[in-house]
Each structure stands twice: as structure tokens, then as C-alpha cells.
Image (cartoon, rainbow, N blue to C red; front, side, top):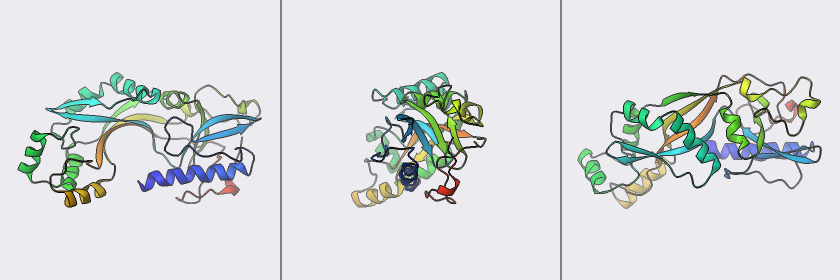
Length: 266
């Protein structure tokens, strides 16, 4: 959760720094937790264009996977979201659910419907919520699938986002579209993200507040059938990123503070 809050703080700080340079309108409010809006709207020649912001090398889109019992899995609800439908499509193309059944030999404790059978299993093992989480972490190892380099651009273009800034690596075009026509004048040109990273699809056990859920189990009784504080997640991750000559949101050390002296605009 702390990492998520750092990300939101980074978005706020980038916006404040770029307002000073007239690259963001004065009354702009960052997207925060919204998954349907760009993190930032860049103001270029009087028009606004969506920009995704990453404080560091992180994930770029995710979807929950549910364990239904009896070694059956399903993708989470896409909620009529184009982005989540895109993620589900990636999972279907990669045959993720089949891979999970093949590679995860142990039965997870993180089950969507914690029914009487689940309760009986937990009672038999005697495992607390924290211990169930650690069991799943140990036995359900990460699974990776290679992705085309255009995947991340295609994902963000769905929400009209055509630029990306990674604090540690710089500023890029997402896909072949440059709606702000930055490369009409930029020398050197703003690099294309697709040519400067490697993308993978990662399946993993992800903590979503395990400590808090474990404390709630102690208060409300074992085994706790409420929120488990973790989940199975399918997410796009990127690595092997080549640096850009531009950076609209460089940070100081590992903080979310912007080093305004090092901002390099196209």
C-alpha cells in the first residue's frame, strides 16, 4: 500500500512541477486511483494529451484471477472496462489458466468462495491467515509469459494515453501516435517505448493488506472468511528499459520528490 501512495504522490509532484513550466494547466488534478483516466494531461500548444507516470519500473495493467475450488480458476470480472477486457484477452491468448493448472500442483488457500469445504480444510491444517498466505507464496511460484513490445502502448492507448514517463528512465511515445506533434520539433526525437523495453505477463500471489487481514482474523475469529488480504494477480510488467534523452519527472534519490533542475522537456 505504501508503494501505491508513493505513486500517487509522484503524480501530484510531477503535475506541480510542470504547472510551473506551463506544461500542465493550473487547475489540473491527478487521476489518483482512477483506472480510466490518464495520470497526467500534458498541455501542448493549447491542447491536452494523456501521459502515464511511473515512479520506477513497475506493472502496467492487471486483472485478478480467482481460485474457485477443485483446481478450477477463472479471470476476474472485467466490469465492462476496455482495459480489463484487454487484460483478459492477453490471458486467454497466453492460455494462462491452463498454465496455472499445469504448474501449480498444490491447492491454494486463496479461494473466492470460502465455503464449508474451505473452512473444514483450514481447520484440518490449523493454519492462520498469515500462514495460509505464506503457504501460497511458497507453493504457487510466479509464472511468466513473453509479450509483444507493443502491448503496453496498446493498453494505454485504450484510455487515450499516448505518452509515458518513468522517473528513473525518462519520457517516451506510447505507440506510433504522437498527437502533440512533439517529434515535429524535438531534436533528438522522443523515443518510441515499444523499441526500448521488454514486456512480460506475470502471474503471482500479491499482498493487498495481509497484515491488516490477519489482525482482523484474530479479532473476529479463526478461520476468517472475510477479506484475505491477498490475491492472485495477472499483470503486465516491463524491464530492460533504455533511457530516454528527456525526462519530465526525474526524482531525488528513491523519493517521490521531483528534481526540477533535471527536468528535460522535448
